[in-house]
Length: 472
Image (cartoon, rainbow, N blue to C red; front, side, top):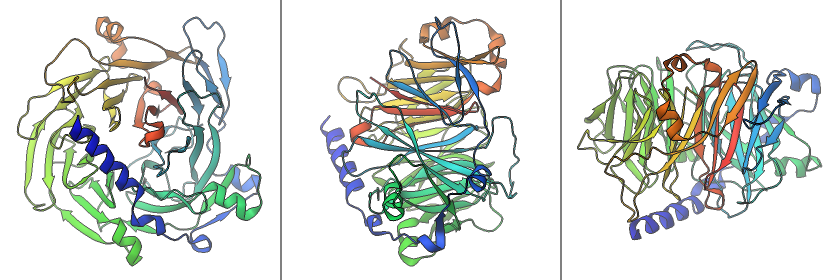
């Protein structure tokens, strides 16, 4: 427990004191405010009105228009209709202990469109920035605070730099975005309150900014970036060609041009589909998985030597480190389990959460409460604590397979949010449910990284519904 507390103190100090706070904003070159409703509408997600039911006993469904928010009865949870399929969700890191939190959401403009790898069409879309009260007992619903409009294509992933530069008089943060043509854009996003003060706008006004150009475009020749992961000021990217590229974003911002730290060729036998750092404090060790299901560990001090840890028979294996446990990591297997491996030197792992025969799309770990959260193609979101009473990683399998946050189902054009249990999932023998309508698939789940609101978790998927929950 002492190691964990020391880890948290070092982690909080790292977020508070960093050089990225002084990163300048270039308003005239990089973005501008627009007010024309006709111009704005071309970038917004579709008017996708949906019908939802929030409890099994609810007789009448509720209609949700684009950008509507509904509170879940008897729970500290909200449902947001973003209007388009969600592929990327992330909270803004903050240095202070303020309750006001920000959430970025990206993806497609509608829920019924498909895109191929390498799509570089002139696609107008947006990144939604939602503001909400992160206190434990919240009464006010989340509010759409700012829309970052752009023309650089679909968004398949976005992540804020963990070194917070959030300041109401300056920046909201530094955002890395993976777009449809495989490039990674680095955006320096202004704080919405700064824009309001400069332009004399009311607090309730939604800010619409259009990106003229990114600060940097990160892409090596003949590469297509599929995934990314931050560690302090470093950004690691996995590519379709099976290579890993590590960029030094802190040095790039100082030099005003991309600075390449490492290029690891031929990492896997196929494209790199997931990548993560083992710890937010360790800039040396990286984990990656390729499309053949191999899990590798890399040491950037000797980047050309890789170590194969394990393999699962799945094309997409999500990954997450487990904080102050330097060799522990979480991954999704081919049977719908999120598994915990305590060391790089053994293939032995234990199942932590179960998703009812569904494929696990996303995993995230909370450094403060030491819980894992996962979502799957069956519309199930699950959480579970990864440590025992002594603070050590769980090593023995038991019958407890996590707490189900909710299950999303689709029936007769109505989305149903159900409160189920792991016993219900484990006892289900209806194998027809493996062919569930993909509209219920949950693609992303993330914990809030800020101490003041670390119990909040956000999840969303193809239906365009983003749910915010407090995990007890």
